[in-house]
Amino acid sequence: MVLSGVSYSNLSRLTQAIAWNDHSYQVLQAADEATLSLVNMETGLRAFAVSADDAVLAPLNEGKQRFADRFDALRSLTADNARQQERLKVLGEQERQWYSTVIEPMMATRRAVAAGNGSLDDFVKNFKSQSGKPQMDQMRATLKDFRDAEAVLLAQRNEEVQHLRSVTVTILVVGTLVAVALASMLGLWLTRAICVPLRRAVEAADGIAKGDLTARIDADSADEPGMLLAALAAMQANLVNLLTQIRTSSDSIGTASSEVSAGNTDLSQRTEEQAASLEETASSLAQLTSTVQQSAQNASQGAHLAESAATTAQTGGDVVGQVVSTMSEISDSSARVAEIIAVIEGISFQTNILALNAAVEAARAGEQGRGFAVVATEVRTLAQRSAAAAKEIKALIETSVEKVTAGTELVDRAGNTMKEIVTSIHRVNDIMSEISAATTEQSRGIEEINRAVAQMDDVTQQNAALVEQAAAAATSLDDQARRLGLAVSAFRTH
Image (tube, rainbow, N blue to C red; front, side):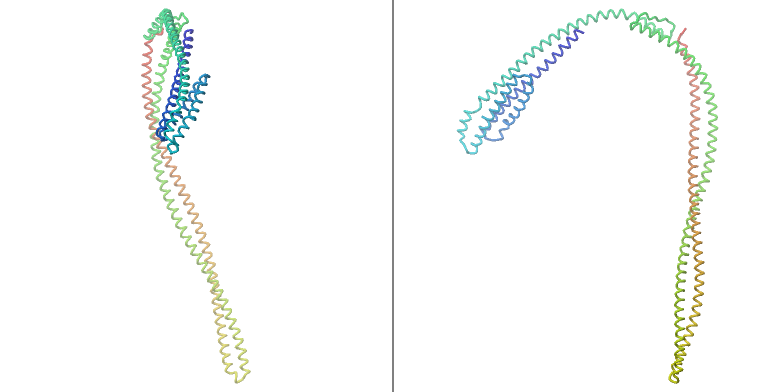
């Protein structure tokens, strides 16, 4: 345990030291990339000084962005090192001053020369005198100090890693040798403590495997081999009890299987009788289904005939209604004619009075009114004849009105009778429809009963097959019980 603890502690420290080494390598790589970014910026500036083409500024712009990224990475990686943070602060200030005092003014001057606002010779002299080399050397020196400090840390950590590795290997070698020695001693002791009881356990198991359950098994220790011997003894006792129960059960199974076989034979006969009864029932139901279907067809035809009669009676009722309407119109017309005849009769009466007055006046006139008297007499005669004719027509009209009224009453009675007939036919039609629906429902019910009986017949046939299978299974079970008894008899229990 002590060796394991020390080994674990050293391995943890070694893992941590290796992680710090990786951290230092990341810092050194970021510093090298920052230096390369500054070189790219300087290269881009020189290319722009030569060509004054903005396209060649890509290395400068990319280098500036890359330097900013690597600078942030260095600050993050060395956040726990105050001295390195100070160096980075100086480096950042140097880079900003270099860019603002050298790069930007030089780019502006070169653009002015390219635009014709300055002399190229003056720009070259200025570029040589203010090329920014001192600032670049300062930044290189700062980065070199930064990198050297990190390299010193890396060397120290490498020494620590090597030391931890050597100590850990030594501990592991010593621990392995000690463990091998202890394991050898423990193996010898375990061999003496386990092999003898195990040999006894093997002998007991071999006797059980050969069917001898009478051997005595003694467990004289509380260790694992002793527990194994105790378990073998318990297993032997349980096997004796189990085999005794199996013998008893096999005898019971043999008796029960014989009884089951006899019962299955009886059940098979009854199932066959039931199947025959179901076949007869199915035949009777088939005949009943045919009869009910015929009744349903007859009821449906009766319903159609009743519906046709109802339609015809309805048509007759409509015709009678039209006759009643026509008779009413005739009665109204006859009454109107009677009124006209009465007017004519009144006019004839007045004409007769006027003709009589005219005749009297003509008689008074003497010889001068004789011709007028003759005319008045003729008019009076015509008025009397008109009155007589009007009376005869009135009598005829009154007779016609009486007959039309009587005919109207008869037609009304006929119309009411037709309505009652139509209502009765509709009732008959409804009753026939109900009978047809009930008969159809009856037919469906009988068909369902027929299907149910057919299913019962199928189930009965299946039951018969299952009964035969059960009989075969009972016979097989009896045979298996005898075989089980023979197999159990191979063990000696007393």
